[in-house]
Image 1: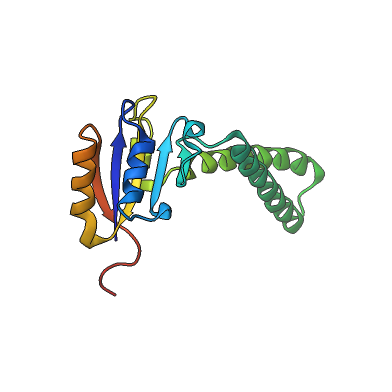
Image 2: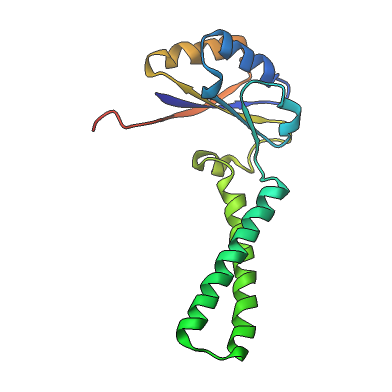
Length: 166
C-alpha cells in the first residue's frame, strides 16, 4: 500500500477528483482531504480536515494540559513538603505552561507528519489530498488523475501500513 500526495489547485474541483477516484474503485476510507476551508467540502463521503485545529480542539487540549500540569505540580509539592508560598507560585506557573503545551500539541498534531512542511505552502483555496492506493494500482491511479485533471500535481508517495519485510 502506498500513500499518494496530491496538490489540487483552486480551479480544480476536489469533488470531481474524489468522485473519479471512487468510481475507479478506491474505498472512501482511503481518501483524505486537507484544506484551509473544510466546510465547503463536507458533503463528500471522505475524511475532510482543516490544516488548522478547530478552536474547540485547541481549548480541550489546553484544558487537559492545565489539569495534568497542575496535578503533577501538586504531587511534586506534596512529596517535597514545600510550603504554601512555593505552591502559590508553582501551581499557577505549571497551569500556564500546561495550557501552552496542550494548545501547541493540538495545533501540531492536526496534520499528518508528511503534511507539516506543506502546511503553509498551499494557496488559500488549494487542497492537499492523501490517497492510499494498493502498490499494484499506483501507476494506474496516477495516470487516471493526470489524464482527467492535468493541473493536479502529484507531490510524491510514501509507504503505508506494515513494512514489506518483517
